[in-house]
Amino acid sequence: MSTKRASPLADLREIFWRRHSNPKSGWSRTLLLPAILTGIYHRNWRLVIGAVVFAVLNPLLFAPPENDDAWMTRVVLTEQWWTDEMNRGVLSASYPNVLNLLNVPLSAYALVAAYRRQPYRAIVAGVLSMGLKFLFVGALVRRYDAR
Image 1 (cartoon, rainbow, N blue to C red):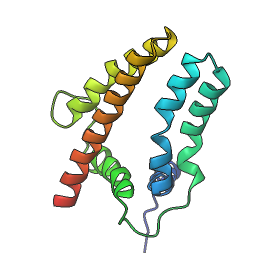
Image 2: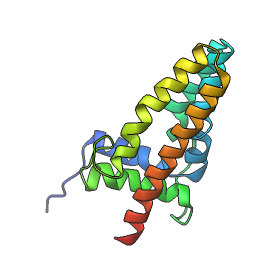
Image 3: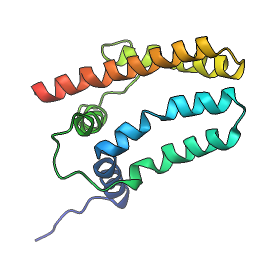
């Protein structure tokens, strides 16, 4: 009897998603944009680099959750479902992907405003950007839960 084994890359992707679905991973990532904007505004490049390094390492820092009861766990599982199983991207003109599409220029504007030391513009654009991200994942979670 032959057992088909997943590729090492598929195994790594599954480990990544399982560990990233820990709610501590998702909620701690919500601090990244404010940290990066603060670092850019204050020209604290260590903070910016630290935030970027944390973003890369974050999914590996937490153990897989015991269940999927937490909303943030379902957010991550939903993103995996949406991109892998549903084979949908995250940037397109269709709903809810359009929310991410709108998020790109807002995030870029927030970064530029922080660099130009325009705090109110950076804050407003950052808050709107984060709001669009929460609207996007909230819409995905509702679809995931309804399936």
